[in-house]
Length: 209
Image (cartoon, rainbow, N blue to C red; front, side, top):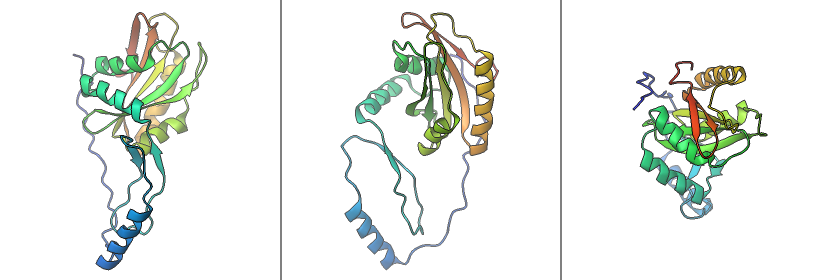
């Protein structure tokens, strides 16, 4: 098993507000929140922007995950376990890719234990090209509260996966961007070959990340 190796990066902890609402006001606020809380379909796991004690305005932005796709990916992630080496990451991404014939760019978000939180396709192109959009990809990680992420890029060319110079430049740009926002970029996996015989290139494994 080829491990990504240990990384000494502790999760950041903000100072936060230490003040608290008066007990009566807090109880009234909770009662109002319970009455207006929107109902959601069963088995849908919402991504929430959290608020702490003492907040005067509760967040209202939420992104709902597709319950069936999320459940299927969760089962697969449970089978594979922590995505702490390139082989496991490739196994998951290959299952997502399927028989894809166009270039696709996306992100796998991970929790503190390197287990999958979600998978998002952030760029879709043609058989020979795709944009790797910075803002939607960063948003997917931040909204999901990711501790770490793995980028993936599909090359459906039928040949062995190898990075182009554009892939190298893209990886460097994302590494710098994720460092700024405090999210650990674990790897960028390029998937090549075809649906009968896939291959992959791991920037982390090649020590080019």
